[in-house]
Length: 138
Ligand code: DAT
Ligand code: MG
Image (cartoon, rainbow, N blue to C red; front, side, top):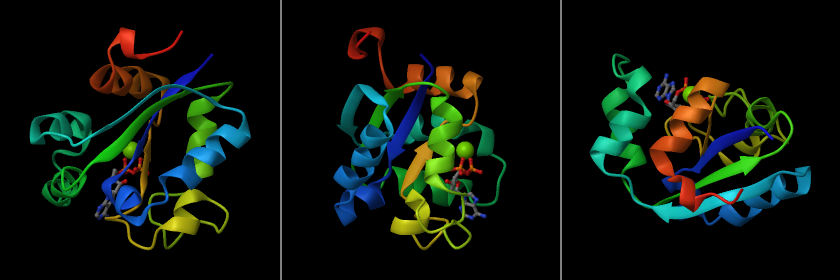
């Protein structure tokens, strides 16, 4: 089954909406095969967002993602990468449709609640960044 990495960002933890978001993935039919709470080091954050290193918002993005604990999870299920992205809504919550996670829980592109891998290649890379094989249920 296809796996993808989901991060419930520090703003989701502070708002106390992680349970509601996890509930949506479970209700949709995805299996959680790895889950942990952690606070990222600057190094891990820069690795995770390495493709954005030349963007003007990179420093701000890293500062935000390390600002507090987050929840990292791997979900597994048919077409999980694309379906999770659809459930999340577009990057800027102002444009995200109501009913999507960002459309229901976020207002600001800098604090947009959730990350989901955007391709098979990035899912594999990102899952390896956050989880060892023994931390994932097969
Ligand atoms: P996504 O998280 O939808 O995959 P992305 O990979 O393009 O979006 O960007 C990664 C994160 O960077 C995004 O979740 C929030 C932040 N970001 C993107 N565009 C931004 C902008 N114009 N200003 C500030 N932060 C931005
Ligand atoms: Mg992205």
